[in-house]
Image (cartoon, rainbow, N blue to C red; front, side, top):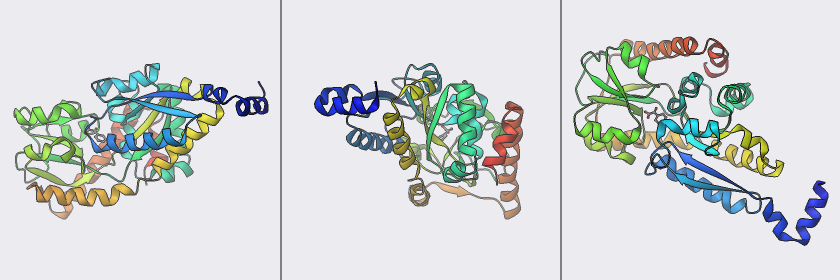
Length: 317
Ligand code: 173
C-alpha cells in the first residue's frame, strides 16, 4: 500500500494507525535492582509515551527471565527482540563482543570514525544483531579485594571474573571463576572468592560494599553496556518505527557524559563506606594499565584474527 494512502486511511480510521504500532520485547542481562536497569526502564517509559502508535517496548525483566549469559543467544535467535547487556556476557555468540571494553574513543567518536558502522557490520554478520546504542561508557573497571596486596601479584587468590578480566587477572597469577553479577554477593559472603572485577560504580546497587575491603587503583579498560537488537526484527520494522527507535537509542547514548560525575561520586561513596584503596607507585601503576591494554588487544586479535585489528583502528587511541 502507498504511504500516502496509509496516512489518509489512518486519519479516517485511527485504529489503522494503531495497527502499525510495533511492540518489542526486551530483557536485561543485569539484575533488575541495578541502577543501569532503572535508568533504562525510565528510558523505556519515555519511548513508550512518545511512541504511541509507532513503537512500544515491553520490558520483560532481568536474569530471572533469561539468565545473564543467555541473553545474547536469545537476541541472536529472536527469542527476545532487544537485550540490555554488555559484550562480556555474550562471548558465547561471538568473541568480538568483549572487544568493546578496549574502547578509548567515545561512542560519539565511533559514530563519526567508522567504528559504529564496523561494529554493526560485525554484529550483523556474526551475531544477527543490530547494535543500537552504547549507554554506559567513561567507566573504568577495577579489581576489588578482601586481602591486601602490595604489588600486582594475585598468586593464591581466587577472583570472580567475566571475560572482561580473564586474561589480565590470570597474567597476574589469579585463579579465576566466572559468575554473573547476581552471584557475586553470595560468593563473597561464603568466602568462595577473595575478590572480583567490576566497574568503579554500581557496587552499592548489589550491596557488595558490605563484603568488600579494598579497591585496587588505577582502573583499566572502559565498561560498555548497550542495547542490542535481533537484526531480522530490526529490518522488519516499519521505517517510521525503525527511525524512531534509532533516534531514541541515540538520544540515550548522548546522555553518557552523565557517568563521569556519577563515577566520581561512587568513588567517594566507596571511601565513605570504608572501602580502602590499594595503589602502587607511579611506575607500577603505569605498567599495570599498559599490561591490561597489551593483554586485552593480544587476546582480542587472537580471538578474532578477522576483525581484531580493524576494531583496534577505531577503538584505540
Ligand atoms: O563484571 C562484570 O559483570 C562485567 O563484565 C561488566 C561489564 C560491564 C558493566 C558492568 C559489568
